[in-house]
Image (cartoon, rainbow, N blue to C red; front, side):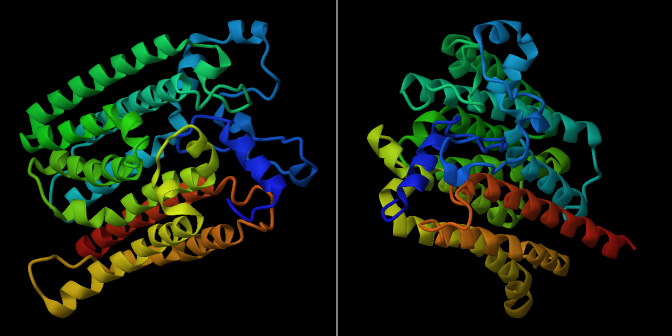
Length: 370
């Protein structure tokens, strides 16, 4: 973060210590000591119904209900990133693939994805805690750092969720087809190894696969009982935005990750390279969708053209431009938290883009079936 105001650097480092590094965050109220950020409020912590506004004390910690402790450990506010590709892939299977919608299988797939994502979150927290990446208690700290659960308890909980999620996936695959064994197997392996992958600059690829391509492909298989490359290709734009969330987090944390010897794409690219990479991740999805809409119509070929209804995703372009503005102005932000919470803002943009993509499929169904 060369060239950043010292106050912004201190705030960034404080925010970095504020919670699990690998999460796709739910933003909470943060009250830094520096005057430059005083009075700035992110969405209230109680909006998630988990974190208290009051400082933690041993007595309050012991009074926490078991369910709330485990919710904090599992980080359910991060789940939209993994469940949106399942929703999108299901919509594609029904509208484009001609499958008859199976609601119970859809819900089963969603719950399975949630279990596996939560398991990966918990395992990642254990990794961060044991490697000294997350040790200080703040209003948005995880259950391990707060002392609500030990790292061994969270590790065991993670293993339980991995077993349940894997078992559930195997049962779905038995019902829907062998190709799901391959898609799901890759996903489980990536999730189980995520903590290690993110430490050697492969975290971006991991979330690109699990929270994008594999989620949509698996959802398609669940509904159609066959594999297709179409949902894989059409989910690339959404997958890039998920990678943008993680990159924004790692870009902010270049200094501290370097001190802890954690290698990320942001660390390898440096500050200026990270800006270019981030720009590619947030703007390329629009270009790719436009290419999928136009090129098959102009050039022909085996690739099915994306419906014209996908032009609706352009409604998210102003949001992407706002994100880019935050990134470009990181050395002199309009608000002290603009760059610090860029990852959370990118997560919101990803959700909007995913909802618009799903809406495009639904609009196509309305046009198609009148």
